[in-house]
Length: 405
Ligand SMILES: Cc1cc2nc3c(=O)[nH]c(=O)nc-3n(C[C@H](O)[C@H](O)[C@H](O)COP(=O)(O)OP(=O)(O)OC[C@H]3O[C@@H](n4cnc5c(N)ncnc54)[C@H](O)[C@@H]3O)c2cc1C
Image (cartoon, rainbow, N blue to C red; front, side, top):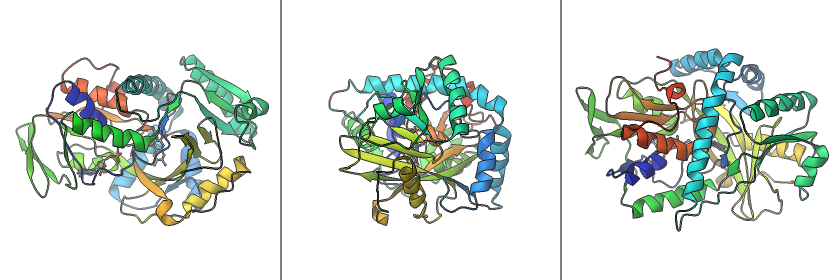
């Protein structure tokens, strides 16, 4: 969110400085599955996930886990999450999620025309593969909904699925093929965007944590780090899973929890897939990327960001892969080959994008949960439009930052 916002702001003539507490070599936007996915119009908070979450809490290799705690932020988020996980709210979210994803996909496509900026964008579609009748039945309804939303989507039976993936023997009943989806290589996107922005004059400040803001009236005057105070006439908070704490520094409340996920990438994979694929019952994402690479990602652990990684969760990912793709015999990798990152999970699965009431020169762009890579370029464009006081390309009301206040 930070870099794509910087892209559009620099393009419209602003002098942009990106301040990050890390060294710009890793964050949640690097090791994810790379889906650019209008197909994901169903938000994280759904009626089914609440019950599954309670059941899965007892299994340390399960794909969804909430670490029980009486921490006020978690309790507040949890209550709002449960209230959002209603069929009516899920249905209301579909159009805004589709619109922002299509906008974002259009922006990524336009980025493919920028010279010397290759981030491996491909438009091959996305498979959602299922093994059981109930999930197949659900898939049938999802296809109907997707088609009603104008998304190019078909249901495949077992043979049709296998014909699309002749190199990978599938243990499945069928799949949804979302022809509307694309994917990219996130690491290349991030490093490429970083060097493109540097070339264009964006200022990068690494290893400085924002610890406060100096305000004058209802405006932020300075962004404070332990080393310096940076003057600013417009400020964008795009601090991912840490945004709740950073926004609180200006008195803005956003319900959010970090949702940790893990991935492993086979650099020169002996296994091949033609399409990215979500293994539905296993909740695992597989993405072929950048030539011979293939990435396997998953799990949603709602835990504070200082919780030590639970590497054995990756066994759960690899076991699910084996159940769907019996020939994919992937040994548990050493710890240094396992990536993890924290998704910024809003309480309803919709991002927070917009201005806030108490500070006139602040824009917030966070809370994208499982779809932040997909919505990255589009969010950047919307941030640019907000700062420039232009009419945003899509209706931003559903993404209102203070919708829970
Ligand atoms: C396993 C996995 C698979 C995923 N797959 C997909 C996918 O296929 N498609 C998709 O759309 N999404 C996917 N996601 C989600 C996506 O990765 C995230 O939604 C997205 O990366 C969030 O981007 P962000 O810019 O908000 O946060 P980040 O990328 O985490 O960036 C936030 C930055 O803020 C900095 N920061 C935080 N606090 C401060 C501070 N106080 N001062 C200065 N800097 C600070 C951090 O250092 C960090 O660099 C996946 C996530 C995971 C974990």
